Picture 1 (spheres, helix red, strand yellow):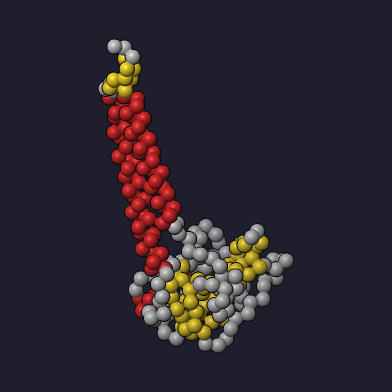
Picture 2 (picture 1 turned 135 degrees about the vertical axis):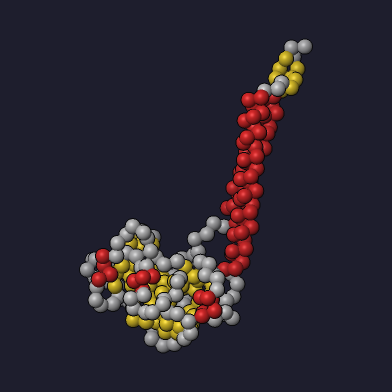
Length: 232
């Protein structure tokens, strides 16, 4: 017995439908990888030659680097329910007033919480003129959580979220984005070791390889299944 080609329209229809889909998914992942490489290159650029007022008026893509020169304000919010290494704590959000451009909320990093909920951690804030390096980020504004703790009178204030509308109660026209300090060596920083939440290009390349591999397997199986044994 030898193997000969047998036309099976159902098998060819199945392969004809899914093979282009798998190939398109693979090429789509390659495009996403290229986009992420471009984004990471933008994040790695030095932005000290772009004034804050000009940056706010231009591209506000999260992750872009920025430099700010100005003063920390007294308004400090402690973003609740933030854990590091299984330890509960807060992210320290402080209003910063640049010499030029709108005031902006700066995420100074994570701080360990006190033993009881009734006690807030002591926050030390530099009072002199500072230059900060950070990256643009969105406001911590979850759509579900309520800000029940923000009614406190003294500072700092514990909050579950910090929408721009709440910041606007204390400063006119705050920046439409926040700034996350780039590292713990920045003035006034706590544990500022968060990295931009973005999938690396290598991950997209890996997904592309998987989709192309599935396309190759589908092609091979279709060819093998189409050759059936027949008696001569």
